[in-house]
Structures are given as structure tokens and as C-alpha cells.
Image 1 (cartoon, rainbow, N blue to C red):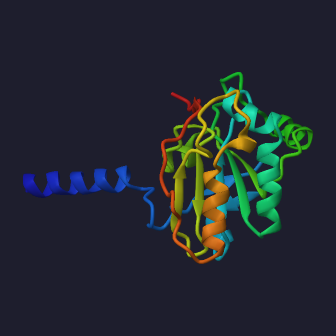
Image 2 (image 1 turned 135 degrees about the vertical axis):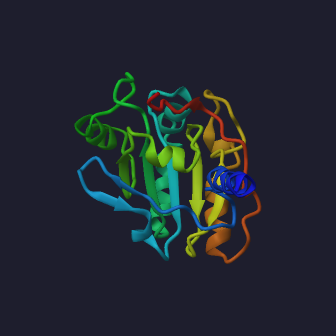
Length: 198
């Protein structure tokens, strides 16, 4: 009986540890966006989905938006029918938390092009996907499998020009659209740590 318990515990841990794995189905989730609308990943079945872990107070995120590189990428991918989901997992007690009203204003002011901005202040979605940093990027293929997990590009510097970097998200979407395997599927995410609630 004890051996069975140990085995089941180990299996449960393994399932949790590898909840997000390249080539495996991306975990479905339900969240609420900044307009109070329910958002489910499964609603976008059959489409390429990009998930961005977001905190505009983080210098790394701020750099991508200040230079306009992130908005350009969002626009380019939106034109290809790609779904872009922002996941903001900053807890409500942190100074970087945005109320839905503040987030709606920031969305307009920053000219952000996203299908939905999910208020994940509970950290449910962030922890489900193992989001470590802002930004931390995920690309999900049309068949629902995870195709990319990690950094947005190859220059982990909050003062670099993102336009001169190799963008892993853009490359992954291009390859998926062309029916090719994603060359760089997993990288180490860089940025600020996600401000989860304790």
C-alpha cells in the first residue's frame, strides 16, 4: 500500500512538473479579461496562440514596448490571424498591479494589440504555465500543442534594441504557418520575476 502511495505521489508530481511541455497539449485555462469577459484557451482551438507574461513596470517589458517592437510584432501576427493573450499575474498588493480600469487605459496608451488582457492576479494561469519572468513567451500551434516556451528574443538586456535581436516568437509563428517544425522551441526566459501573491 505504501509503495502504491509513493508511486501515485511521484506520478502526481511528474504531472505537475511537466504540465507545460513542448510538443504536448498546452493546458487549457479559464480567466477573466480586463473587460470582465471570460476567456478560455479552448475558445481559440485551430488558431496559433501567443501568450505573453506581462508587467509594464519591468524594465525588460518596458523596453520592448517603449521601442515599439512589441506592438509591431503584435500587429504583424494579428494580421496573420494569430491570437495574442496577455497574462498579468501581478498580485493586487504589489505596486505594479493594474486594476481593470488602469489596464484598459494602459492598453490604449501603449497601443497594445492583444486579443485579451487577462487579469491573473491570483497567479492561477501564470503558475499553471510556469511563468517565471516578464516577459515569458509561449507559442501554441493550431493543434493545441506547445511549440515555444521561453524568451522573446536572444538579447536579454533591458536597454537593447529589440529590432536588432532574433525574435523567437516571430520565427516560431513563421515556421508553424509554413508547416515546418519550430527550430528554437525552448529557451531560458529572461526579465523580472513574476510578482505572484505569497
